Amino acid sequence: MTHLRVIVDNLFDTAPTGVTRYTAELARALVRTADADDRVTGVIASHPAESVDRLRTQLPTLTDLAALPATSGQLALAWNLGIPPRMLSDGATHSPTMLAPLFSHNRLLEPGVHTVVTLHSTAFWTAPERLSRRARARFGRMLTLAERHADAVVVSHHGVADLLDERTDLGNRVHIVPVAPTRRLIASEPFEPRLRALGLPERFLLAFASETEAALRLVLSALARSKVTVPLLLVGRQQPGQVPASRLIAEAGLGPDRVQLVGEVEDDVLALLNTAALGLVYFGDDDSLGLPLLDAMAARTPIIYPSTDGLLEITGNAGLSVDVDGRSAVDELVDALRAVTGDEERAARLAQEGADRARSFDWDDSARTVWDIHRALA
Image (cartoon, rainbow, N blue to C red):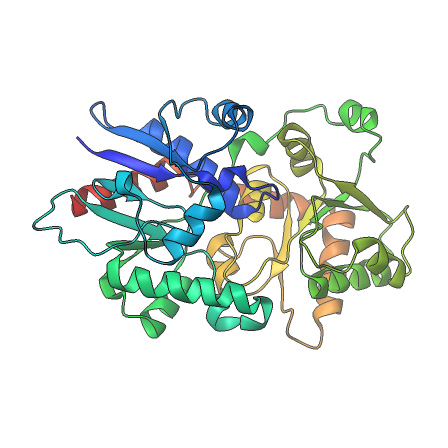
């Protein structure tokens, strides 16, 4: 029997990210794939009862929750300083992030005591300018603790694993566990009546407002130059400190008939947009989880994305990739936008390629790999 405690406190974050979706999907899959005598407990900080009830609604199969006697901020501070709470100092702990109670232990003398953390981003090394001084310091401390005390570190693709091999002393403790599409984000036809009811166009391109300023400027510049008349829907919330998307749209000379700010939407609406879009334009970072790409591919929506090693590993070269660092980035993106909106035969072929690739990934397979990691450590 394995009693696995999964830290899911980031699901209370007010600004959900790809990592929060990763946490929710992995937690659900760990419960589904547990053996009959296994037990999964969700670990959270102290939160108001109504917030905990919302989490139970979000993860109804995770019936066992353990609330630690501290706020999220207090837990983050304690774990960043290497102070483990007493109730997590034994047994198996899995964190879908780097934040976890990491402490000195001896698996030979304390069988079953181990902690596995997850690294999603290599920005600490590859793009430190994107992180505040405080964020760099926090990550640096957690990385040091992980090198000293983590029994395993999970990453989602080989690019991150290779960098850890070069820059850290983690050695063979690094394990690659791929992410997978969120099957709930596939809607069924007909789409048009629901889109009309929401006041949205029936033909559109999809992108996320959380993209970096540079990525949004590139996409908007290409859209303006392409003369594509299909509007671009920008979905979701921008990250704190970003230049307002409305300003970037105006600077690109695009009106509301070309770009619409949709804002945050519930999963059922996101599923509709994800499935009905003529194409998804996604410019996540090189070490990005790539979840929106997999979600779109599974929904048979053609994808346009940067030709970075990390994203190409996820897509398997499906869709249309753009060399964002090359001089012809805008021209390549213009061609891609025209292809998915104006060439039905090519768009259908791209949709099929993406769907075929997406079938290679499944959250239950990923969860089984996580279970295997923990059982090998027990």
